[in-house]
Image (cartoon, rainbow, N blue to C red; front, side, top):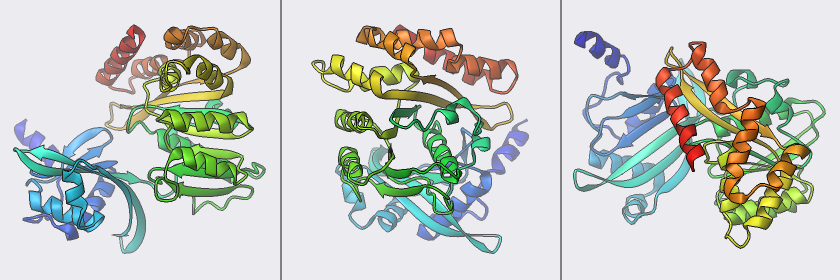
Length: 388
């Protein structure tokens, strides 16, 4: 049994592992992640290299990556002052685009980078997370949607707010980008789209849109903040404004204002479900503003989609979602709800409509698609959210 487990682990190892990892080995690590179908590689001083393959964390090196190797890689990618920045408490977010040789052909690859200063064995250390980003968003069918799906059909109203939520790594950006890519392919969509991201993830260069015009900007490189990005966009006559993350009161207030003036604003939020999203957006504001902001948020909201990725029995991952379209009846019900209990009222609406994430997960669990452990964890999460 031990030998079988070792053989299973060995198949994930980097071939011809060097005695010491240096910058010239980084491309091989990224190529190895691609060959495994991985999504993220984790590099940390003094630790073995780990790659996330469908949610399973696989050790892919026999030896730890040394402290000085991590410094060399960090300086190469982020400049000579990068290590000093990290040690002074300034994490670094960036993006990387390279070309790798795949069977004799150079292929374009994009990655999202995060470098953070850490402590390992009592010494200053560096941890890097490198996330693979497909150059072009996957088609809707690959993420369990279609043009006829209720979510896509309601994703692009003429104006208002659409929010996609979920924890880190839940596929929020993928869902949003796949919907945008599908819209670009439509013959009569006729939309000008401005996106503001930190950093830019998916790109749309390879899509020749017959009726849309899209521009992507990076925050803070092209616009210093999301608030200023939205203000900038209003001067550019767009129909759709896409905001990478709605995480502070200024950004949310600017998004509401843009939605109230006839634009569609689509953004993401790090929350655990539709009810928590509404409460989080409201609670971002000072207590003196919350009542008026609750009315603004509910009045402008058109759709919230919340998503998680759960592990399947065949060691892949599948999305489970809940969504709420804010029709007039739903808005009236939530507008009269106490702000402190609005998440409970929203959860009640989802359960009445039988469209909660837990119901979808239970269905997939009973069909033998997802792991029992993931279903139980999700069930506990929802019980905890109800208790708040």
